[in-house]
Length: 634
Image 1 (tube, rainbow, N blue to C red):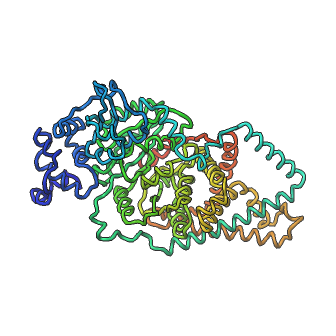
Image 2: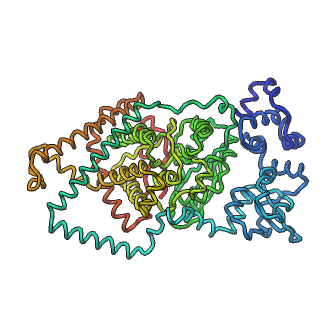
Image 3: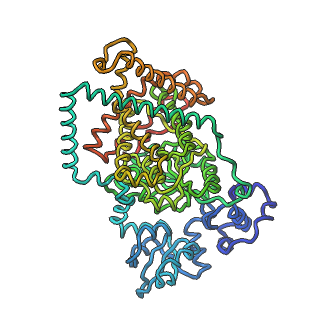
């Protein structure tokens, strides 16, 4: 509840407000705010873990300049303009620019060459100053706008900050080495493919038999995991236990939300409108729109929008690879929240989503470092592909992921509706800027370092990919990222085993190997339909017809199991009409094989290429939520 809502309660609310803050008194003295609003701000602060100045700013009661002037009056110090900052000498030797951006300060030299510290939040900086060298910690304070300070640091450390964004994850856990010695890698892979082709030509039946055995084995493993996750999901309690009574009144934490944007123009107005529906206290919301330096059109469009004080833009310097995780790594240091969340440009989250996440983090075990929400689609009625995509996501986010988490497996993350403990995210180095499925990679890096991910019962709606080639492009990017993630984490299998433990290590192998094998070897599995229809099969010379019939029947039985799981996943009131479409998922899955072969090609020749997904194709659907032509990061 904010000040505007508390005003509706009338004078009775003031009885519980207590004394006004010194900053509030200064603002009252200058006529910026009323005495009653200063008192109500104190009441808001009791329920929100934030500064009093943030409350005044988020409520639109005082501008940044008015707050800086009020601080200057009570502290008897000076305020600097953006031009003053640019003209000052920065005393940044020995300082990490990311720390200066994160804590919003800049050590400067005054006219006499003596050190002073520019900060926008003098009270908060006092807590951090004890970690600084004595000549800086004890230096006089001057005041300046936080964004002005950050802009000055960015100007001086542009190259360094760009490098940090690209290499934030330690090299041993990143895929960036995959780009080294590309010619040797391509030559080695092509040589292996040539040898494989020679072996296939020389011993076609034997090779096909090996492929068939592996495909059948991974099919059985996949079915077993699906059944276990399905049973776990439908038999467990659907929601997390309620927060203890003592937690219900604990002050809510500040939450930063990163929204990566690239070549988004028309989507911006709709995005701001959707974010404004969030019911989380605005004084605790820190929404950062992450733009690319070369994307001048989106920057110009955003400049025309009057953003609320709790939404701001951060421009990521141009560099390679130009990917979503690199941009988020850069923006991470600009975040102010203890929790960091991720949205995509076209997302429509539940209004109370962040409140649920914040409360869950407050009473979750210490090893829970990430909460994953449910992703859903708002255009399932558009065409057959959109229907199948919606069924697939309902199965994955409402059945498989909750079931896998309850079984104790590490789970790959989705790319949005993710929330992290900021200190853990920073300790792990954020996201791998070179991995095109940075979310799946991060999910297993969390597990390797002893952290867990929980599913939280809150939904974000997106637009289902409803055109054939855009679907293939998007899926090929995901599969390429899966291949990359598997190769990265399997560099040292013994270490991975010790970090994950036997159960999670098995889950890792089962998840990645079976998923990739099923897509790549799908044509081998399809061949068993020949047996069920009484047609000749390539394995006839080696395997009896009855044995092949058993394998074919097993294949058919697993397809029935899949249909049952899909049907259950969409049996809720919202998507119940999709139950009749569940059997057609048998014809949807083969599209993944096309994407898998595209992913294999790109893994060799274009490992860091981010194949852009086009959105905005659902606008013609009656009642669809507008995504305004949004596109994923390139």
